[in-house]
Length: 262
Ligand SMILES: Cc1cc2nc3c(=O)[nH]c(=O)nc-3n(C[C@H](O)[C@H](O)[C@H](O)COP(=O)(O)O)c2cc1C
Image (cartoon, rainbow, N blue to C red; front, side, top):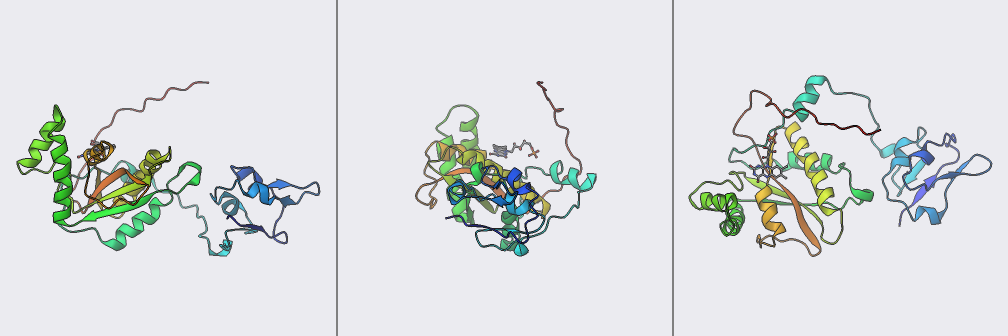
């Protein structure tokens, strides 16, 4: 159960928490003090916006002292840093034969925890698959399925059989985002998490590439031979590894197409 404490001695009654709460849990009493009922608290999605916006640290959510929360800093990225982060990321399709440092992966996963999730469900769990044999087995299962399909998919399956790896691109690892099988937002929550993860990995010099073929196989019920926990579903996945290539330029992309309706 969610717990929220408001320290009236520190509260300056500014009302920022009232406005920040997406669930309209907090309100103002006739005397101007801030208040909430336990009934309203039942709607809490634990997004922490009330705690994050309070200038006085007067709110405590789930017994985590505001003093233990990292402070926001206004340190904007330079234009170059922003370009290199967003435009400088490439889908990597050639990897060094070396698994990603667990320490670095954990740091990137730490960043990915902050991807948005519907109603702050934070439903995403991760499954990391490594090891040459395990990865070969995984790609073989996808290739066998692809070989049964018409057109381009079939060619990918055949290419794998002839010794190429268009499925995992020789990556030393693949990480899957698992959602709850029975929730409507699982794919979108996992997509957002993986998008954060690929940018975070890129910021640490780790390459990645969306594994669309593997996800297509999973979506079509192909047994990937993986220990998926009960009630969970593979929703998105990234090949990960240190790039064996370096890009010199940022490629062009289509111009922004924005329609404004007023
Ligand atoms: C949903 C999705 C699935 C993808 N699946 C694959 C894939 O299976 N294999 C692959 O090599 N690239 C895959 N990609 C990478 C795209 O081809 C790549 O993002 C696109 O060509 C643009 O290149 P960039 O990411 O370097 O900007 C996928 C990307 C997305 C978003």
